[in-house]
Image 1 (cartoon, helix red, strand yellow):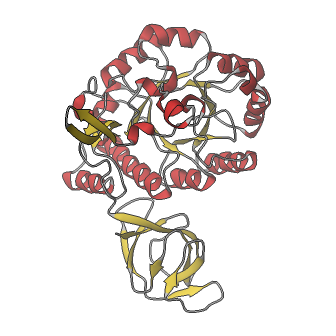
Image 2 (cartoon, one colour; image 1 turned 90 degrees about the vertical axis):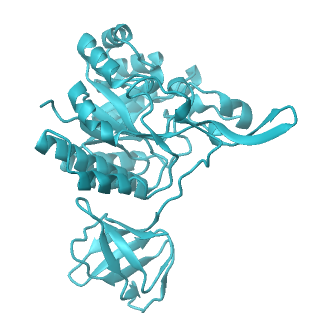
Image 3 (tube, one colour; image 1 turned 45 degrees about the vertical axis):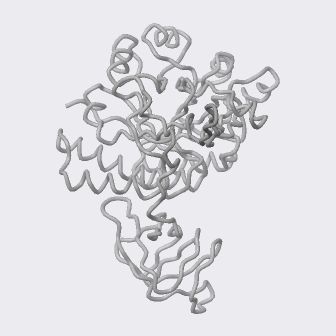
Length: 395
């Protein structure tokens, strides 16, 4: 049996970092205030990066920091100092795509360098070249199949990482300039406006129709984990730093449980477990799923076309457990809910726990009929509930 790969989850904020680690990520990837590709993301301050690294390390997880933007000379100011800071707090690696950034890192710190998917490493010759430049892990271009990934690993001698779940870019490894023209935002410097996700009017003579003809389906590789293990992939990556806590917790939990099952059994898990995991991946909004290029080149069936762009979620995130005492559960409310509603607690392992809201109080002890976003409410004690569990409800 081959080694079970690392599970790498998105951490678009300190809260999401902690939840990803607790729901089973072996490592998370996050960004600081600058030098990344998600300018619209919350990202982490330096103090939050320090806290996040300490939190992850106490639980045996790693933190990789993205500095994967394509930078101009003016953008490089402060990069060396930032890298030295990351090294001082114990960050585990840097994710980069730009040759100038890689050279700056090599001059200013000794942190391992993971080559971003943005660099479009698609073959073993490129892999060997990157290895000679100091790269210690390859995050392969999303156009690479699992079989090709195995060959690249064997030929280069470098660990390889592939995306396993989340949004896919319709451009080649994310080299897109559509939003530069439609919104004046540079996607390769953190400003992607996701213009490919819009519906556009197509005209053919007198015929006119709207279509999502540039919008890729979402990647979902849960059923391919056996092939992933057999191919010797070192790390599987979940996309989604800009997505909410329900997404990050659910997807991390599903792939953690599935990987653990493969590690224990050495074969596909029971059908009932596989069906539960598949159902969990339907609970949040997403586009139709496909396997992208993991089995071979993505074709026309990986694009939405005239279909609805999103599969509507079946659940909403209602809150996150902030504290558990002997008598009650303190919940930070994300979306409103009322007394009497049945909610579900998403534990770190195992099936969701249904729980009716029988009583609800404010922090001052006042009885409440409705919980409002941004508030803290006290619910009755629930068995099996832990701090940082997601509280969700059916739509």
